[in-house]
Image 1 (spheres, rainbow, N blue to C red):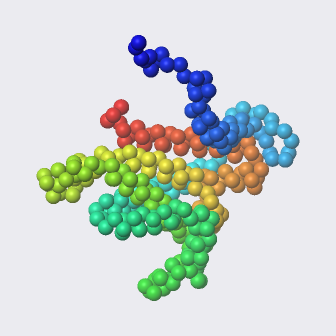
Image 2 (cartoon, rainbow, N blue to C red):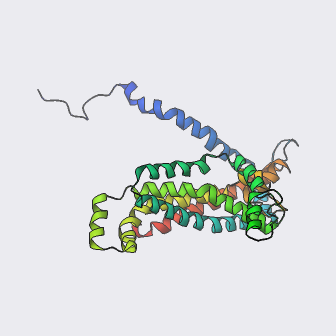
Image 3 (tube, rainbow, N blue to C red):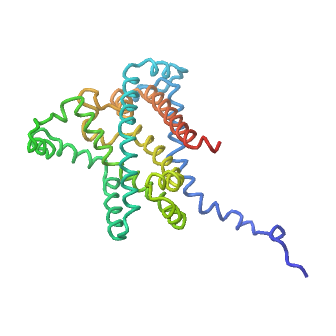
Length: 300
């Protein structure tokens, strides 16, 4: 008597549904906190609705036209892009340097200690980060201006000067998210096979050659993940900047997320804020897809 093959074995109906018992709760939660709000925002982006002023009224693409012709929206988008263009390369360079240094460290305890310390900025609540930044960069009592005074440099009005305030939130963003990049790239370097690395070490002592031909191919997935996630995180930056400056002084630090918050929860124009949110989502998706396509263009 022959044994039944895998395809001939009848799986009980309850076992066929078993995977959904594990995936189902996460899927429902994702739909509740992800898909539903997105559909909600997309719906209201085609309606004229001021919160508390009657039911929504369909107005087609009027909200999108107003958004695309709004100087405030364009300024916020450009300011956000400037924020991204400045902070992202610095985060990548510093994060890569830290990851390479950790990779070269042979002391396991030191490496573990540094990795634990890198988690601290990421785990700190952004609102707490904002409060600490306010104290550190205070014109009269802040430790930053005290350090400048010791060096013989005049104090800077970090919270009141537009350019200084923008630089301050950029430095804070870099401090908060460089560790994330470092940990991701450090995990990518850990996937480099030890025997291949030892073989190339015997062939050449050039650090650049070992990095270019051995480490970089294994770093590419981590670089893509870092760039994509940091692009998303930077575009939607809100709580840290809101805690520090609330978009001020004036609109010097008003990124797109803060601009949408002002339209929705201060001007109560939900329709216009929804249209701005949808356009911001589209821009984010396009940027992320462009990065992935560029870094993997040789595999397409």
